[in-house]
Image 1 (cartoon, protein in one colour):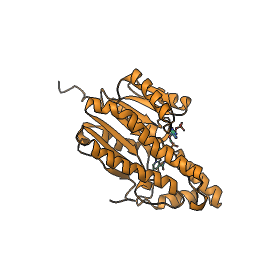
Image 2 (cartoon, rainbow, N blue to C red):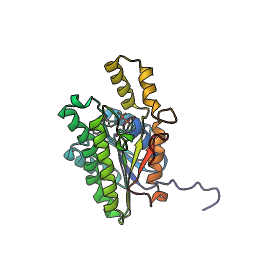
Image 3 (tube, rainbow, N blue to C red):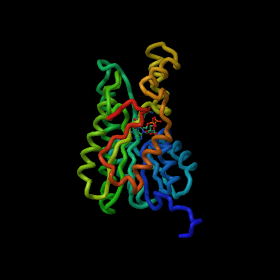
Image 4 (cartoon, rainbow, N blue to C red):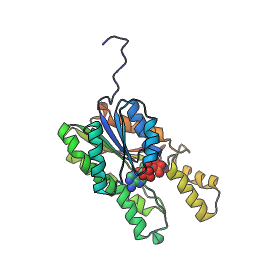
Length: 264
Ligand code: NAP
């Protein structure tokens, strides 16, 4: 290699599947992994949203496919299409999620079940679907986007926090099971991040309490010692690092991206 040659892209030759990749944190992760040279499959429920994000990705080829992560048959069909388009998967990022809130006594079974289905069972379903590809190649990366609500409690989100704590248990157990197979499994735990989930959370609290959006947002940010929301790109940067070869010894970890809100 001459001194003028650019360094090879760290994820060149890898196929990364990102769930919930049409917008928010998932779109930022898809873009970052594409910038690092990966071929990316974007998975979500809305084709038009996925296609818009897909069209803006650098490099390629990339692929978009619709599926509901809480539906195993839907995930299996999407994965078959992704394999056909881009080959076996090397990297799975379980990012799809929803954050419903309610006081505990008003948390319906429907809300409880939806939080578990999408955030926890969706992660389980996608891990089970993709794992045979990683095992066959003797290497791979799984990164689960959990939350600081996986590391501590917050009022009015018991169902979401329970599901995200569950993601951490899944992450740690699977990491041990795969530790000698060349596959790492980690969780990234962002604090309040600048996406639709945060905007919807602020709007919900404004509607419930009559406070101004500025007051509600200030209360959210007050828990972060840096007094700011996290940017999706910051989450994407952490994911990209975990996916690179240099992070091969990092497994079973929950990396808090929260300005110091969680220290453990
Ligand atoms: P977002 O902008 O609302 O994006 C959520 C994504 O998940 C969307 O792309 C959505 O796509 C997808 N999704 C939701 N339900 C799905 C399902 N059943 N099947 C497939 N895809 C589904 O929220 P975000 O903030 O980027 O959230 C991404 C992840 O970060 C979530 O796991 C969330 O819990 C976590 N997180 C967010 C924050 C925050 O403050 N924003 C903090 C900590 C952790 P479609 O609706 O098009 O299907």
